[in-house]
Image (cartoon, rainbow, N blue to C red; front, side, top):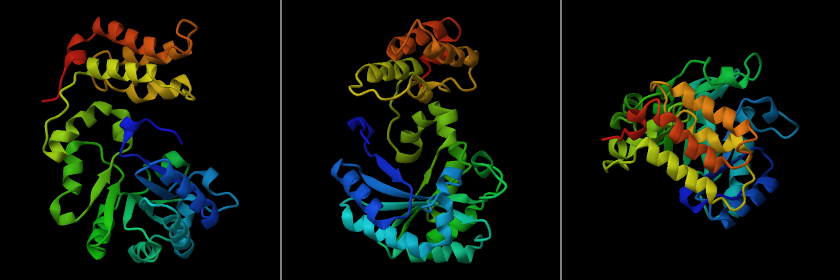
Length: 289
């Protein structure tokens, strides 16, 4: 549960439905100065369908979620938020979704992050559940309008700045949106968020500066419990759609497995800059306006 102070604001997510167990987890998160704690009611993975109900299946039992949220909120001094889908299996009408939110909020939460797809627990694997069920943004807009005192954030299918701006239009009443795969697949996109959404200047860093700052960050990790692949994942796609981006990706993937670097990921990342400068210097030095 450790994290670096530069990561604030940082939220920790828990799965499960046992009020006693999750209240203890929430209290611990609060003591570690997390900014909020989130309960997962949206994951369709098989590992979230064990003896203790967790993930998307919890949407079928809103009263249980309410009790769990109440216990967590009572134990923590930080907000408790809920991540959910618009439905699960046959629990897939707007009425069911509205009832779920209405019931759960009584437990003591005012913030829902809603993936605008239903989850199919039988017949689709987790990857399929992220793309096959159709997006229904209008249902999430409906929640924001039906529950004006709650913060409703939309998640799912947001691949561009333009799409994000569309869903965040004032008439949709959303509190925000959550971007997942787009940030993973094209992290350079994040460099435009300050200007596009907050009206302040972008950081003004080139990709080269971003990579070298990240290498420095890796080098200062005091308690490195992460495998090498986890450490390079955030920058693997930094040159998405750029010329010779596959060379950069391949260099990092092969490097983290090689005896040459071992666990010296800081040096691997620094060397990746030198390598890529020979193939696309312009992309390395590019800066968002």
